[in-house]
Amino acid sequence: MMRLVKTIRNESDIRGYYSYFTEAVIEIISLKKQFPEEELKVYFDLTKVHHYKQENLFDVCFEQDKEDFILHRDEYVNIETFECNVDFNHYDLKIYPDDIRVSAESVIKEYFPLKSELLSELNSKLESMDLENTISIHRRDTDMRVGHHITAPSLEQYYSIIDEKDWKNIFVMSDNLQDLNLFVKRYPEKVISFEEDTTSDNVVNPFFKNDKSPEELKKHIQNLTLNTFILSKTKKLLCSKSNLSTFAILANPKLEYVKLN
Image (cartoon, rainbow, N blue to C red; front, side, top):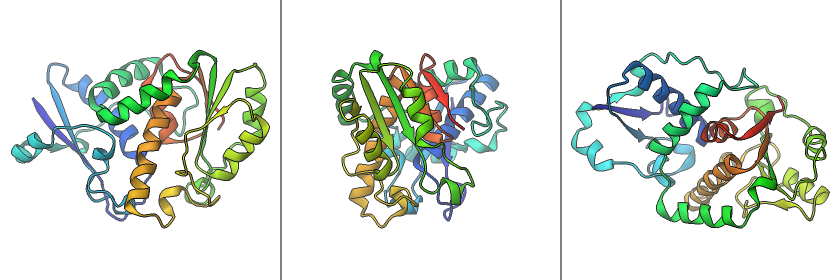
């Protein structure tokens, strides 16, 4: 057995929740190819992600074997010690290779098991939706222009693709309340959203960069994760450059998707 640990690189880095996870999926795929006969055990030690104000960021939503990590800590090797030989920079790609998506699906199922209460909530929400007739939207804007020098697609770009078909439902996940409300205004009878006050009311900063309490951030993280898995289960996803959107696309190789930038 190879014991691996995924950590943060720098405590001062201000990274989004799914930046750690999408990166880890690709790293695990690479190691499975390099060591096909080995059992890989991965522990996510995300204990110093201070801007999220959680004890361990991974543990907010997912199960993992903390006891083994404590007992065998000396055997765990930083996953980034190994060279990643999977060529996958999702910011540069509009279409993701099918073989990576197939491999990623099994990695996500194995290494990202939802906590039981979140899994129950997810299944309840999925059962309430007609997924085959639902298009999903991940609207990522806020700090992308300043923090990442990326211009988000216009809302009209989303509208034009949505309007190509008479969808029963439009599932909207937006990083800011203003854009969410514009989708609701345009499609008042079709929009489904489970944001529940966990999206940003600031059009410049995402939720986690605002002044929020640990409990508010925990709820935000849980909602992010539920919404990410819902995105992956819909018929079609419209999105832009984002680690979260990429995770959703990798989680389901059958998901149709359009990256708008």
